[in-house]
Image (cartoon, rainbow, N blue to C red; front, side, top):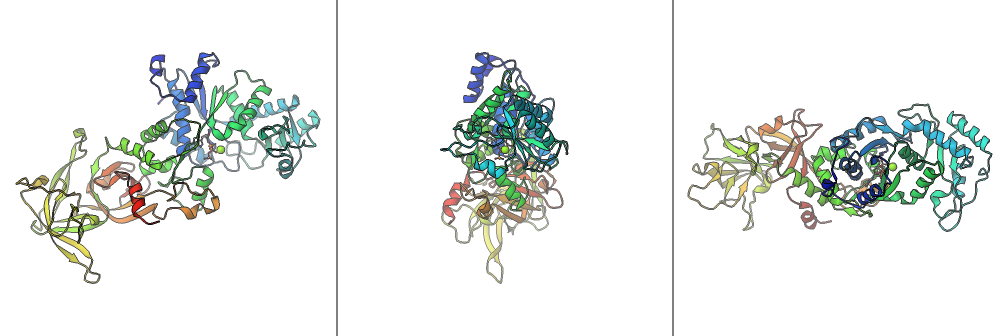
Length: 572
Ligand code: ATP
Ligand code: MG
């Protein structure tokens, strides 16, 4: 996808719409947009992006894609060097690209504008709209007042302009300890909106910045940096989440007070939340740093990198974001809805393969000991263009442990003593006996006889065989590790107490099977290749661990929504 795309008005009618696009349309119609529409996606590089960010990305880059000549910028909000890292910036760029979006010429950073932002702050001081306050953080908080009581003026509110200018310059040069002074906007300590009670706009920090090193000792606060970075970049529509609604008056105060021409317009939309997970980077950082997950890209994480590693596709994530839509509320969307999009995207073009997760040996007694053959299996049941493959077969096979029951209910159409079952693509086999572990008495192998006239799986006399199971040749199949992922938290709405986050993790969120077997060809699949394992679900060759000796597959999603059913079955 490129940065811009010409779309005529007619095709715009067919574009997805939402209240934000309607607001943009109204601004264009009223002549309030000078030139092209400009949006931005402003992540803070203090962690990986999550699916909530994907919603913002699809919205911002989607507008840029659909409006004639419009652009969307990727701008890092790198104003807090204590938490931000260059490797996070790199991963974020990779994730945005993977989602299918580009940002044209170059990546931008709030730090690119540290000089002009500082100049804007100086202008605020010079015009009497900002002052250096030397109260400590506690005192500032104590003077803020409450929702029902006004705040109290700082004793430094009337500090002479020259003195503030001098102090601010020396703050920048690193002369003072952190917390010794801050720069505050002079607005109104009695404003009903607390954000307008002389907010701090610059603070002293001596931590080196990942990009500007130790060039700066003062860093702008979020609201100031956002409003003016937007202005510098000619952003027309600054889209952000609902929690910034109360900050809009401050955003606008900066733009008005500094007499920005064609100021950007802030519009808020509801955050995306998903059930059975936590979204904010604050929580995700906890899970990673505490070693409760296998890094930011653990396939159970709601991060874009985790979802990629799990086998979710960019198409599915974009489809999901579109279906969820852009609204004014923050409700949680069921995880199942995301899985529906994943299945819908994978179904039409994903190759089929056979894998046995929990193997039980089946010996076909009337099949010659030293014979071997292959059966043809289509790679996709509905798309012949994906071709077919030959699957090796011999006297000894593996079937799924679950596909055999000693005491089956009547409607169990799989293996049980005396029952005939179809081995998919191969032949019909009747179970004739079992081999038990002499110590435990449990079944370790089943025996069977096949009908030599049923090659390909068709009964020669047209007799009805209802059950069909998948299988893998015991001699040529390859041992594999399979990771079964499930909801990270059992509870749809985990308790948001950071201290008690880890203990709420679903103990079954990862089950690792070390002795699965797969068709031999799968061992050669390149990392990231998706498959549908017949009857089991969609899986993907792990992008990190697959191909180093043992094949490793991650379960992307089951074939059907087993979660709601499973929840009912399992206690607790
Ligand atoms: P987090 O709480 O996860 O740290 P954040 O808002 O602090 O989120 P940023 O990196 O500052 O993270 O966010 C970049 C952009 O993504 C912002 O415009 C923000 O509004 C948007 N965004 C973040 N989380 C969500 C979400 N859950 N749904 C929609 N947009 C989001
Ligand atoms: Mg943030």
